[in-house]
Length: 417
Ligand code: SF4
Picture (tube, rainbow, N blue to C red):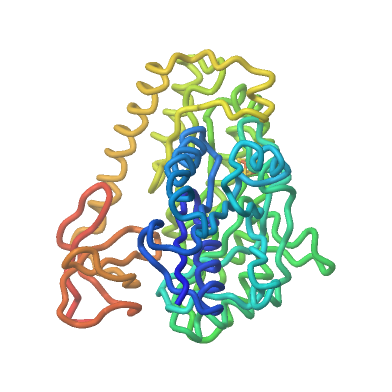
């Protein structure tokens, strides 16, 4: 039986695509292997959001060069954001790679047979379903629109069909994915929006929870917020990248909103969706960011107290307008200091939010085991660990929280429930 190996880095979108790719191979009689050395087909699913991710792809390709020399029959293919209109250049630089195909594209191994229907076979309790590819926003620091192209929404009926199929195979939660899910549908004939999609997914029998990633503050509509509040399976958890607390920096980032707009939106969400957990992303050390501007970001986070903050130090990506037009003038050590400061702040906030759970019973969807312990998440996306001798995978369980930390909760099944 031929064997395949898929190496994946990057976002949930890439993970979802790798799952689909794996199923596609299996439907054509391939078996997965844990190492590239044992595979007949190796696929690297690449990411270029940060320079470090791109470097990892290149290192991996360099490491596989000798393997291709000793085993020239092995097929080596590359997909993901690294592959776009630059294919000729990639072919020149990496002549030993057999195939390049773009993100989300059919790999064309078997004359497209079954690609549309390829779905993961094993029913993970939490499934990831792409709903829109690409982005039209062109934030000045971001490479995604150049690499993943313009927004292309999947037809609503296709998504519903895939979610139904996943639920039929045992998934209980679905995360709808896109670089900007708030743009969903504008390019489709009937122009459904994300609220319409959530409403239909909410009706799928057997599905317990719905999540969606990632929102853009300038595009999140009141209609969507109302839908989140109204639909019982949509989790009270929203990712809303702020990126900066300084209006001057937001303008240079070309984000299309002000800090005041952002605060108003958060306020509206918190009023409409009680108990909502918000996560955000911020970039520190953007070109010309002063200490005072950094402080504005710090104050925004201290004030709004997000459940989760993903913080990154700015790094220029060739091809973006920030790299062409702005000077990366914040020293690396200073970026690191700002990053550490945000991480310390967030650790304190996450400790406080976690402590609020102590003694409470929460609903946990169990994803699987980590070591000896079961792990799952609350509707607000808090990680929970507990012990049980039962097979809890895929179950919704009531867990009474006995210990808390900034990053996770520990508890025991609540016998009373
Ligand atoms: S919204 Fe901005 S940061 Fe997000 S993918 Fe699009 S261009 Fe990149």
